[in-house]
Length: 462
Image (cartoon, rainbow, N blue to C red; front, top):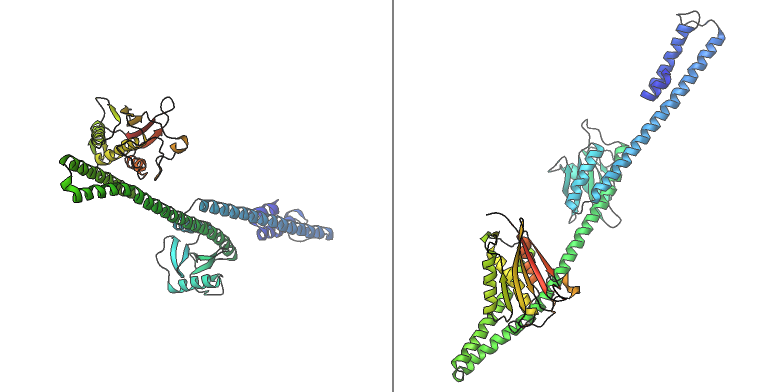
């Protein structure tokens, strides 16, 4: 029992020592003459020798089982660390965050300072370090470059630059070399042992795979952004060239008539031509403002000048502007007398609501009834613009707030015969979202027709 306890608890050498001690104790206390180390009978000497051999063999076997159990536990812990390392890196999509996470996990796994240097235009640059490190000495950088260029370990614990303070292994995938990862000597100045270097090589493989995945994700995002930018640019150019042509032709024709035939035109006809020029110029101005607004929204540069405003006043101004421009729809304002004030940018909200009304004017026939009412809750105030026109096709309802989407379901009124740039509702959504609100479209509203656009704003007490 003493031998087995020593072997299981402390290992093989203490167990052998316990075997010899047990041999002597048994001789001293149980073999005559007692309390001496003398042996009077040969068979007792044989028994003692057999006991000693059995004890030594038992201690060796028990110690080996203990060492194997300890090695199995260490392998299990290593596998667990690798799993956790891979799992934590799998959720990172930014290369910088991936490098930081990998350096921290390598430090935790190996209990040594860790650095990651990535290839940047054929030069290695420090991407992450744990504990944080700003610079590395020239010998360390040379060891890192050798490891990167030769695709082999370098630094302390290797044949190349054994006097360096760091041990580096390359970060390489099947397609490219990404950089190197290194660990430093421990606090006593010892280089990494064979087990630590093997674990570092495994962690380096996982780090390289995670870095390549994040780099590919970033490259894909950049490619998608560039493709989307090119698509939007082409659509914008086509839309602007198409939608500007009609009002510019009208302005050019009216101006030419005034310049060349002014003496033959009476005052009423001249005023009519000037009114046409003014109306078309206002339409162009609105298109330009919409284009600038969508650019600011996409760039995240929309500046809000918040103030406490009355949505009823804004709705009234927007309706009066639409009537002044010749909209032939029937507008009805049905707002509560005590409509709460909200903190918004009045100019932007007026533009957002005007875009919704212009959308109704553009896509419904003359005489369509447009109702503007409100819904008030303790947390929000909603403006609802409802028309009884043809409505929006079901296949286009989910896309009406996207850029350059035109869901022309009705006949444009005489006030606005153009199709527009398809930006109005997208701008409305961006403006309302910048205020912390939301926009929703419903169609049909009643009896299979009609459209309702709801602008919801968060409510705060002045």
